[in-house]
Image (cartoon, rainbow, N blue to C red; front, side, top):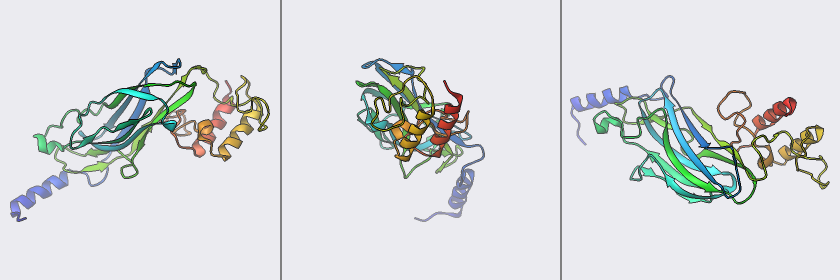
Length: 264
């Protein structure tokens, strides 16, 4: 391809207008939310997933899965503010999860300097919304799990940008109760006794004592994320504090220490 000096200069100007690394104050948040925190067995749970951001005029891209732990539930009635097309794959259901979502937008430069809807709505784009039904009681957890190839949301740093930049991204999941549980569940109360095989081992009994603490230690050492995954991070007030994130690490351990000390 032959380019004149004028074209090369114009392209250089456009490239300079974009951020080669995350611009100052750029960040994004992906939030999974439900309309309530407790449901009856068979009741419809309405799930909405939103991407929002700061410091940039336009959403660029994201890729991943809205994952329910163990792909629990049966989902239906999917909608999105994005429309399927050459740049947007809205994925498919696997149980209650929505797998293989891959969403991107055209640069504003290609559309007269105006972001293509809804990619300019920094306050929040609902990229996945649907209903899920569960037929077993329990605590259910949902999070956005980004693709390994794109662990962060990407944004266009300016209306002249032709390329996107990855920005620090917070992922905030949700947890709720179906049947047999209640919104005021005492989370540190995990067991009646701490000796495996004894009656009601792993069954809460309405009292917090050292049995609960030692039971948590046992389950944490065994990698039981169903019991021990409790939070995104261990710092009160940060996004996802107290909400499981499908990852078991030291944040969960220190979070349990905090809520065990606080009691119920």
